[in-house]
Image (tube, rainbow, N blue to C red; front, side, top):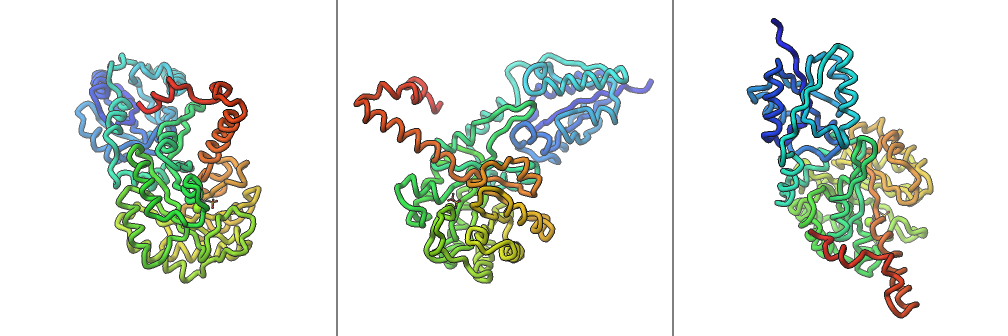
Length: 431
Ligand code: SPV
Ligand code: MG
């Protein structure tokens, strides 16, 4: 008699005895096809897997209960179920609640089409990949592992979402916060070390008076308590003869990308209205800087990003495009096209043309002034990274001012108690 077909959908990043129980149950029922979730499918609803698809595939192919491993490209099973028409699907009963509830219902509905059955062995108690992952992340992350995360995220995410982080506490917000939206878990993918907020937190202007050494010292504290990738705002990269030291230091501590802007001379923050004292670098000397940075890095995964300031300096689309192409040819791994317009029109005009010239080069947007733009529209217009560049500091400042003012006004702190974190919570903020 022909053996029955049994389908098991798995992420199988960290294989534990719970998986083996499922596969053993499945093997008793017939030939086991594992629908192995691709990295993209996993990243659509939770963190990137530790192991890449091919590594996970090799492990599964060598488990004796598994007959075949196929790609499952979405969290949803329906497409694969329709093509393999299994007699059984086996899944632990834990998915009856939580984020996979809908996926389960769709599996049941689809199996009904040919009389297939869902088998749900009891979830193995006290073991789960998430528990093991939490344990592993408490050990920390190696610099190399962190550096490569940005490239891996770019391969699997529609858009990589980055938030400004000016100290360890804001780093922990990026690390731990998530928001569940239908069957997706939205989270920040990484951190932005901003020259603006690094300077302001030290009571200094954003004009490179806070030097790289000071900023890197701050990064170390952030890296100590986080595992997500970090993008470093390197202003204009400093003097060309120093750039290789900066690249090496950043790479050594696990930074994933450094962004260099094409400005020279006296530094002004790009969002200042008056840019009359700001000069743009000429193309060939900026390309030399990029080449020098590129030649100094050790890992292919470390990104050298060129930031184009043509729109900030009112030089127009043609200038921006010319620079974009030359910068990529000189070795830039990605382009940040900056703008301080109220809407994204000029950066969308840029991306439309640029993507035809350099389709493989990732584009970065910093929607500080055009904040109405939705991530979905950035995606549709060819952007792969979005940086929310200063929002944590802008959130903290008015909250602190308000509280300080109220204490002065009332000559006591009682009136602000309801607006601030209770003592019993703040002392337990860090577990
Ligand atoms: C920063 O955050 O320091 C930046 C982005 O460089 S901007 O402030 O828009 O120039
Ligand atoms: Mg800056």
